[in-house]
Image 1 (cartoon, helix red, strand yellow):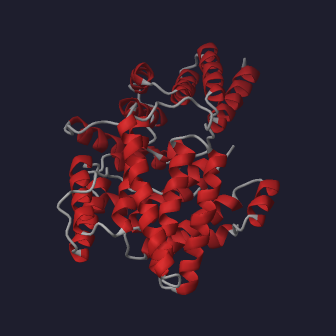
Image 2: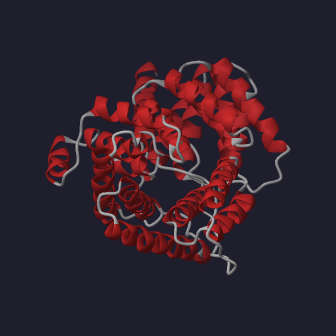
Image 3: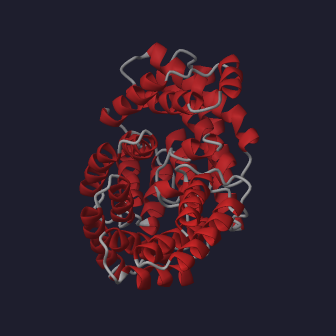
Length: 401
């Protein structure tokens, strides 16, 4: 598997940026308040409101790179939303860098590049004026981290993201040297250190030579510290911990983080889907069913746009929870998810669950057929974990015949 893409993609805020208003004023305090409100709206999936707030923040302080950088970052997350990359399942144990992805709209792509270009210009100029200023280094590093994320996920160019990621890592490391209190910089440093620690030994050596660290335990601690530090990056760090804790087989810790985020961002329905998926990994199907059914209730009354393939994800998670509880409605729900699925790897996972349902019902031949379809679909979509699960099912079912 290739862990760099999922880890880079964990750095997330959710909103959509807009161009600079012509009626610009110089009010940094107002701009900071508007940025905070924009982030809150975005994390609640209120993209239109977030767009207006970021536009107003840029107008209030047009020389501050933070609003432009957040605008670019939130445009990136909007693009991921439209592509259907909405939960840890999109990044956990899978490496689908070569998978065909939905094209990002031209307007969205242009918005990202215009915002990040302006963030680069302003942050680099600030750094040139104050080379020993911690925040100047922070703004430059945050902009380059955003660029690395977009290049790796939306453009699908892992190698192309390396230079920007290295610059981000170096700048945020410098922030911690200049001002150790700035633990928000520990998010990028810790995240990239964790990424390197997850690589194979030869690739890890190359990363060390390029300047990256790789102490896994220290990396997790850095992200945890960033998650406790009050800053614009704090929600980012919390979302990142969901991914890391799931990768570290600590689903109960991930669920505690999700609880914090649900309380903070109550309109984000996707947190209920994430909670259900994570509860299933923790072996808690009753909790998983409770979470997903609460989320389905929210979804039914939510008029806002849905992510690409989102309905299939909800039905799949619901069906999986029902199947784990032995509920006969599981097969109906899973087959409904299969009809809605537009992702090959997700269809593979659905067939794997249907294989389990058939096996429990004593239908070994049907279970074997479903497992074989699951293995093929997951393998073709570079879902290594799903393909491995299906192969184990095939081997077990074949021996039992």
